[in-house]
Amino acid sequence: MKAFILAAGLGKRMRPLTDHMPKPLLMAGGKRLIEYHIEALVRAGITEIVINHARFGEQIEAALGDGSRYGAQINYSAEGDHVLETGGGIVKALPLLGEAPFIVVNADVWTDYSFADLPEYPDGLAHLLLVDNPDHHVTGDFILRDGKVYSEGESRKLTFSGIGVYRPELFANCTPGVFPLAPLLRLAMQQERVSGEHYAGRWMDIGTPERLAELDQLLT
Image (tube, rainbow, N blue to C red; front, side, top):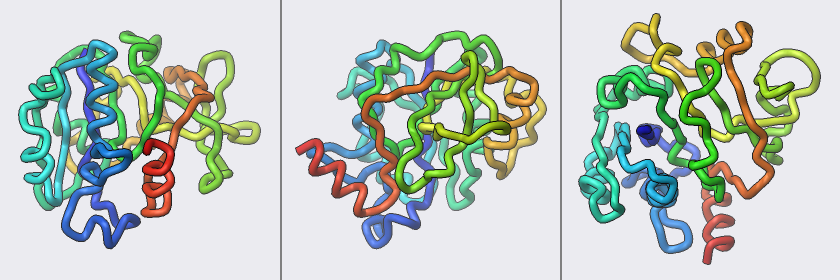
């Protein structure tokens, strides 16, 4: 099984910290944010990793190299100055990810969740890790019912963690270019082809300097 780390965001909410550095390389607890994911993936036995990048992408490649120091093999999907959003970024990287289901994780979240607990072959087109709504997103994203994820219905008490498993078939009808992932997932949810699980452990969206400082304090 391979993993794809989304690291091409512009980090606008993190400014001025990201004026000269990509957000995945920001430090917390003595490590770069993206290193926590790489190490957790390797612990789970997932050593083939693809990372996309855009602005300051050369810094990511210089910092992480080929992944050998982590016990991983890292390939890069460079988007240059044209950020493709999540959906477009995944489609561009598909040739590197192969034909089997793969893990996708946002570089700017932190969690103690074990990637080994994710299903290697989801029942449907995708499997999402959901967490309790954080204070900064109280309206939530989705509903989990009988192991299936829905976007419509009763109160949305769960938020997408930024971690999931996707089958390449989810992107079968996509044209390369700039587009988000959410509409694809919502369409698959309408067809009841998205499974999910609720994780009640530690998880943080490191979207602001304040949350980065909070994580640094937690890990130090």
